[in-house]
Image (cartoon, rainbow, N blue to C red; front, side, top):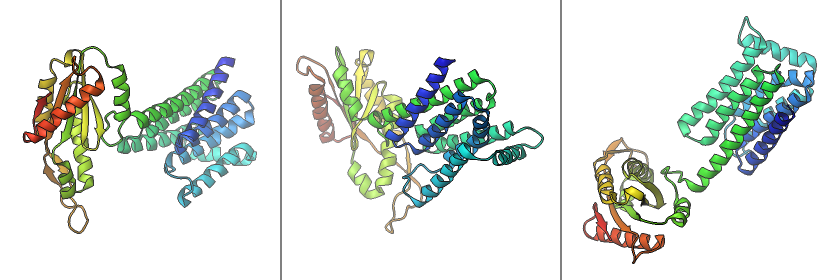
Length: 349
């Protein structure tokens, strides 16, 4: 029991600190409620537990619906004041206020106890975060949704000290895990394309050894594509090309920068690099990209399908190209040859 208490407290504190450090405001609010809940659970005071049971669902729902933005905005300031008021009431509310809130929770689910009303509010908060994750795809929202479900389990098991502490520990662990994974994605994953970024490529280069091949990929006439259809359409094209690379390359693709990508072939994929690159080239050429071009008035026009092509240069590690930097340089030269030869082709160094 002591180990479980320390684990719950440590994870609550760590999630609070990490949420501040990574400026994840929603998770910070969840971590704040978690820390208060862990303190109440460890202390075991009946008044504190009753207050946590009554106010935690309200606090969690506020945290879920609060927009993830700078706190200095007026809208967020209002939400923060409401959150602070609810937290203050949790700590110092008189008994009749807690009783009134219990009655409100019962009213949410007539004919039952306050527990189901509390669980309904927590479940609603989890659904809000889950829907936001489905729409936006941000890791923090998925983390918040899972952490809320764990917290809901803690409320449902409030009278079982060990199990409720375990659920709170899981809640803290999920918040910490989500924050760390989010930090990893920020550092090593390109936000636009979803591919690993240049920093991830640099680290992969340091680990390369043995036989490998590297391909450089460039979208043909991308600048004119942006000028014609707008930068928003260009972003769509980048995402679609990245999706074709991920699906057909048979190796690890990276966003190199701008409209350039890099593919690293290792082990058995090296021998099939040319065939795999040709499959990617054909897939990109054949894929219709749905865009909304910007009109002369600056407004998005009607959706239409367009196509792009890409050029490829590939090089193997050899006696002449011994380091990853040398291989990339050779692949880059092959890429320029592909462009000079008419684009939309694969050239080997």
